[in-house]
Image 1 (spheres, one colour):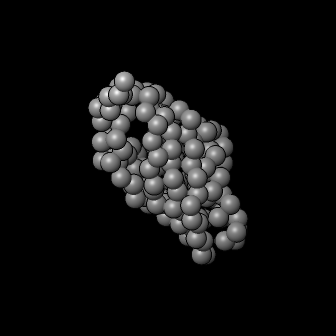
Image 2: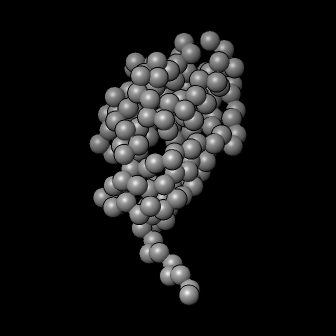
Length: 142
């Protein structure tokens, strides 16, 4: 597989399969020995952990949209700069649903083997997201 195919697969994984909670599609696009170097605490970092994290996010956030802001591909590496937006409608890290809409930017570096995502590194501001979700609502002026 070439750089163009890797780029297309990276975009499909991160904008369609994961936010759409499509486990079967994800399993076809990710290598069986996949390793997430920045997995959520308690996750195996493997493919099953990625699927579990996808389900967890689906339970916590509705109306998920991932927009690719930048994509750079070279050889077996693809870098994605994305905006993830959703509405907080389920429990997330112990925080009860707030109904708040949010948008957060993330960076993902992916390595491909035989056209499938094999390794993943991410930079995201989870502390900022928790702060935004936990904020007291601003009182409306009458």
